[in-house]
Image: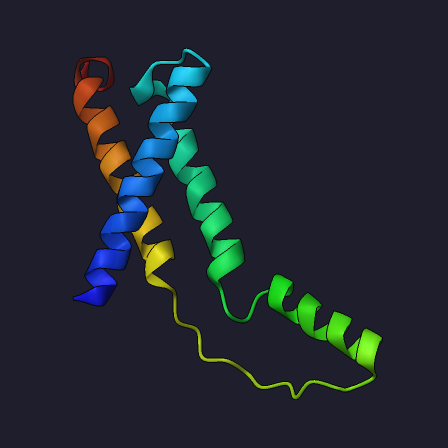
Length: 107
């Protein structure tokens, strides 16, 4: 249940951020949805992936400052529910865009 709530809160936060972006720049909400979704997926992947460059860089920084070597362990790849929530948001935005512009795509 907690994981589902995290995913839905992520979708809600992305929706609010998307609306604010469209409102501030005076862009149509639907026209910005696909690029916003792709950027959201990219950013959440960078910051939530456990075995990525950002976390390895932090380990190297700690080793450089303290001289203490962090144990390296291969982490099992699992994605966070924030990342999955951003994929759900992108999927909903993609479906909404295709539905609204269906005449353009079909004809």
